[in-house]
Amino acid sequence: MTFRRGSGFHLRLLRENSRLNAALESCRKVNAVMASAPIAPYNSSPLGNSSSQNASRESLKMEPLADVTLLPGEERVIDKDIIYICPYNAAVKGKVFITNYRLYFKNTDSETPVTLNIPLGVISRVEKMGGASSRGENSYGLEITCKDMRNLRFALKQEGHSRRDIFEIIFKYAFPLSHGMQLFAFLSQEKYEENGWNVYEALEEYRRQGLPNNEWRVTFINKNYELCDTYPTILVVPYKATEDDLRKVATFRSRCRIPVMSWFHKENHAVITRCSQPLVGMSGKRNKDDERYLDLIREANGTTKLTIYDARPNVNAVANKATGGGYEGDDAYQNAELVFLDIHNIHVMRESLKKLKDIVYPNVEESHWLSSLESTHWLEHIKLVLSGAIQVADKVSSGSSVMVHCSDGWDRTAQLTSLSMLMLDSYYRTLRGFQVLMEKEWISFGHKFASRIGHGDKNHADQDRSPIFLQFIDCVWQMTKQFPTAFEFNERLLVVILDHLYSCRFGTFLYNCESVRDSNNVRTKTVSLWSYINSDTSLYINPFYTPESSRVLYPVASMRHLELWVTYYIRWNPRIQHQQQSPVEQRYKELLALRDQYLKKLEELQLSDSAPSSTHLTNSSTPNAATPNQHITHLQTPF
Image 1 (cartoon, one colour):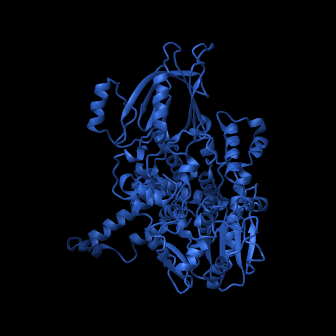
Image 2 (cartoon, helix red, strand yellow):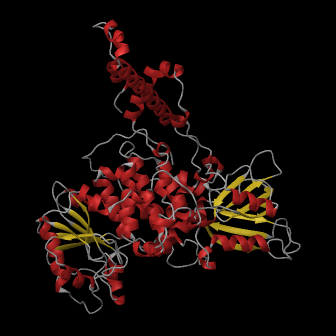
Image 3 (cartoon, one colour):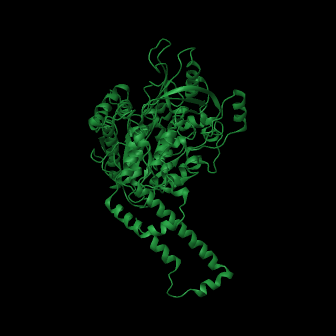
């Protein structure tokens, strides 16, 4: 639970700190780069109000809300005097403001400000607490369960059904799809210079990998989603596989999710392919076309065996035969090696997160912390996912092609392919590349975001809910902790991604697959999360980043090296929430700001030096004088 850096980094940073401290004192700090507030993405100031919102406020006689600026398209719905039962302090009187996007609470009876700023999409469940005849102070009100590890309790006066209006409005706007309404992403009118929907272009990404080539080709057989309605329109398949072969294989793979290429190793030509389970069933059915197709994948790489990584525990894969699924048996797939990775299903992961929430919110019981954390099995699941991805990356790095699947190929499969690609390909460790990775492996290839998160849906007990994408981001965070210089992006990016996974402010994570997004015109009617993030990338840059293009990352997937992500899971606890940025990281940002200032001065000097009126500057310089370039070299110490 501590912030750790390698000792070598500390020594180099302290040495540079000593060398440049005097210069820093005299240098004007650049606030935009240096200022780093605690992570609180919901409290950042959005864009301005519209005139229609001002008119609406006048007609409803609502008092002005000076502390938060409404987003374009956001409208106030109701204000209500209420008591917030804060789990860390006494009950706080205040006013709650509900818009079509958020719940905002501000206290009115204390010198210490208490605020809540919660997108309604974060709400999982709204329940009435107590009844008209309830006894005890603050026993009548509402209890709100959130998707981001916290619960909220509000108390109201018991007379006159005072909670009815606020309950109905929260229930209606938190679950718009259950009430025939639109998600806020379709109502938002935010504008950004960059169109984030253009971050990922499938053909461009495959060209970056060196495709198509003599072994792999691009097919448009799924351009109308006729082959597989949960796959993207552009697929990469073995060069020798015909369109008819693909159709025949689709009949033998769950949900028609055939094996397709996800990543290509330019040097050894090994590939990562992904798919769903074969429809073997209890009778042990075989499909010659599927068997031949896997041989084509193997032959493209020129190896004797194709390694198949089945994400499931062996017993689960066998049990899936009863529902028509199964796995690749040795008798049918003689040129393949099958490895089970023992990663549990969505239901186990959901229960594990519930147990984790119980021990981190609202309070942490420190006397039994380690045993309580162990009982949730959360880090154990993180370990298994990371361990599986390491095996995939290692096999591909050694020159052998792999095929990855779970049951339907959109949950554990996405975790394994994206994490292994993050280990193998440094491009995905850049800010832009990480966005491409998520767009490709999660969004384009049909992870069921709508079902797993439940956007705008009141059915909080739906058995399809599961924190699969959260686990992926947690695994990425674990890697950033073990390799602090390998990633261009920082922890703030990961938190903001998770917050907007739930918020419904952007269209990026809405719906289950590309075909449904197309039918709902998501790209034209909503804003991409990447538009927002790329509008100010300085917030998400890791100052310790050192590009290393050919390095493969192998994180240590053992319980001794894994940590609970405290600044995410326990961030609502005031003891965690108000922790400042590491002094080492702050100092490094200051050094980078100073370096940028010197580089800017150098540019200005070079421009003035090239102008005719400044020739006297060149003539007056002496042979022994240090050039600006020499000064810059001195400042740019390697980290």
